[in-house]
Image 1 (cartoon, helix red, strand yellow):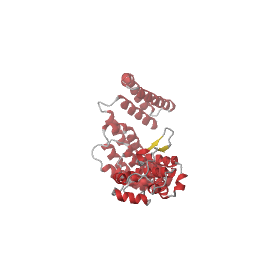
Image 2 (image 1 turned 90 degrees about the horizontal axis):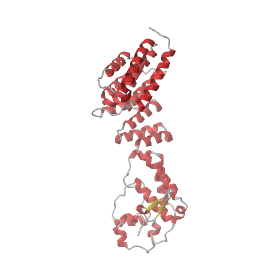
Image 3 (image 1 turned 30 degrees about the vertical axis):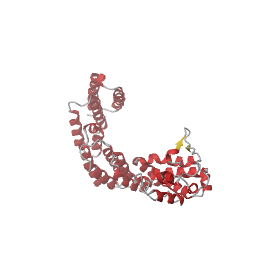
Amino acid sequence: MLPTGADVVVSTDGRPYLLAVPEFGPPPVEALLDDPVRVRHLSPQLIRGHSATRADDVYALAVLVLDSFVDDPGVDASTVLRRAAAGQIGDPEAGARRGPVWADATEPVGRTLTTVRDLLAAHPRAREEVDPRTLAGQLTACIPLFDSWVAVQHTLRSQGPRAAWSQAQLALVDDTSPLLLVLAARIAHRHLGRPEQALFLVRSRTATDTGPLTSAAPLHLLFEMDRDLAASPTDHAGVRTDIADAARALYARLAPGPRLETTEPMAAYLYRAGHPGRANRLLNETLKQPHLPTAARAGLRLFVAERYLTEARRAAARAVLDQVHLLLDRAAPDLTAADRADLAARLRGVEYRLRTLPDTP
């Protein structure tokens, strides 16, 4: 009857407890050798025949936490027993990490491993003063950090952009998700002032994907980068040209659904970047699609009306708004409640702008 991690329970108030183990006396050596993993949770004092104390419970909990991060080296039973008796069973540096290497770079994980190492090496009297809830809380704080995006965000807040950038590069080896890619590129662009590196990262990562792209997040990041560079006092004409090329390439590779959702932002980007002809062609080609959903068609026409108002073309905007009213009247039953509310609010905003603008031929 030796305690293991399976004997640790957590009550409804969040407190960890080690299940009571009857004191049947020292177990037979044969039992220890048959189940050496259980030996790892015994403190050296218990193995040497001392009476069980609270310090031994804390030791077992520390081994349980250690096993969450480090894989058992898998040595033979007699070696496990000898190492346990010498107090050398739990070395955070021994064995293979269970989690990814980038997770170890987060401060809570490193702090928890340090705590475990100190507890396993501590004198029993020092372990008796440890509140198990503290160690359980540290372990709980580590759980979200095994999500790469959460881990990099945490490192960015706690250790700064350079540490987060290094961690993101490690994480991108295993995680190809667009969210992590965008976060890493944004760190390079906004926090480290390296737009060229951010653009290279987006291009290189998306180039390795085969087939249509299902996420427009990298494309929206390019729009964001272009806005920032356009507002910068430094001349970034070369980078903005490269962004334009990358944006057109990404938009062309989007799957139909994400591409339709990104048509308005893409057209707005093209207008802002000084390519009105391309923006007009994109809008015309999209609006000519025979099976375009009503909500998307109305939204694009409202975008065109907003563009006309930006150019102070009041009459042209009024004509487009009349088309939108007609379209919505005909297709109202086919629209969802959310679409109707969104389009109605947007329509009111455009009409208000129209009333406040002077007419310009």
